[in-house]
Image 1 (cartoon, rainbow, N blue to C red):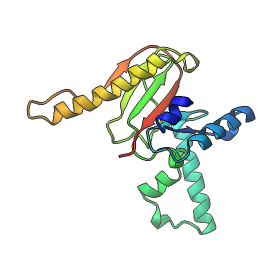
Image 2 (image 1 turned 45 degrees about the horizontal axis):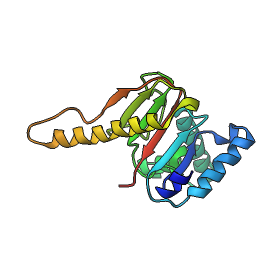
Image 3 (image 1 turned 180 degrees about the horizontal axis):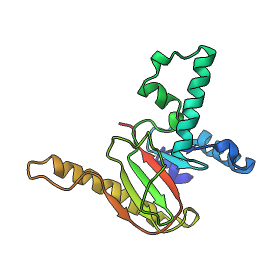
Length: 182
């Protein structure tokens, strides 16, 4: 946590946190509270998360608000939907980097709304989340940096590679999303 504070990195957990053991809920709450208000990067860790489940929960929550008269169906737009996502307090911009652990080379059912339509970098890594090491994080960050470099090359008259970079690193089940304030 020392480096998290030094770098003013805000930590957020997303997903159905209430379904997790109380000891884990308490640890999450402490980490989030300790980094609340930090304006550096945002580290969003998905636990008990599924993109489809999130969208169903959003629909149910908004339907309940319509039933109670606190939300008009005519007011529902992209911004209103985004305000009801699990990530409403965690992500301040589109997702920049998705780290997929566990060796799967896909990001299916993960941050469906948040990563749609932008040029997120995806980093695939062999270690499972508990074995995820500092070097794995550094490689993932380099993947993100390469995406930015490629995007800049693409904007140059000479062309360049696609802005999205998907790079395998190993095997690990889980997802993490990093965002930065624009």
